[in-house]
Length: 384
Image 1: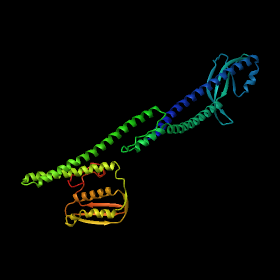
Image 2 (image 1 turned 60 degrees about the vertical axis):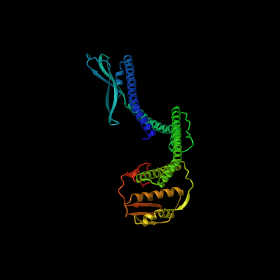
Image 3 (image 1 turned 180 degrees about the horizontal axis):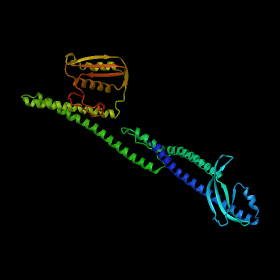
Image 4 (image 1 turned 90 degrees about the vertical axis):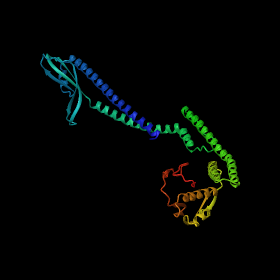
């Protein structure tokens, strides 16, 4: 999961829980405040009604016809303290029960005892709570959407230097002699990361350059001693009265020095490739190049040691001629080295492909590792 998606998901998840808790709390606080307000209104109505009854005893008749006030005559010995409760009453117009809050008290009027109940509808209050709750939820959804959009916008702006530097680090080639150049950010942590990356890449680049120079210098320095060893060994072979055992040892020295010379040339070749010294490309006919290289192995094919089957279509490619020659030669050498005598070697050029196949033993190397440096199967002294 990307960092932006992860942070956005976390922010939205936490925000949802916070707003849910806030909305629930707000709902109950608002409900409590409205209930308290209605209760206070009912208490004020009781005081007002008691005052009117005290001033006018005949008001009981007008009170009785008020739909929000209920008057009921009770026994003289019954006394009830002021009581507030929630109830429901059936509304004939709306044909449904509507929530009310009521307050009841007893009073004496003209030597009679009455139970008076005042009702206050909670429908408008409940509707108000519902509307406020819905509005709050809509506002929360809009707010979360704004948070998500702002988070993406701020994220892109804040992290732009980081991703630019990451792109530069990914594309940086330590083989380059240029130093890595990273953007400076307004954020201290990104600048610290930049400094660490610059120090690390510069150290790696210098180590790599030193290693390349060491490899190249070592290969050049080895050439002279190898040439001396070979020339001295050849002189020893030409000396008189040389014993057979000594001759075998000298031949062994010559073979070993020859292998070491090939290895040295390979190291020089790798060093030149990594230093981009083979940058002179030419447009070459692959068929002609392969044909020319095959002629170098005519002795083996004409002697009948191997059967060569060669078919080719002409196509051209822009490439360095030295590298192409080395590549094709090595492939053919390896095909010969890993083919039993008398078997067939197929070389086919078609559709911009060069295919070299043989009937050798099954490879013991994982195919994915074939093009990795220094990965080998069974060793063959004639392989390249």
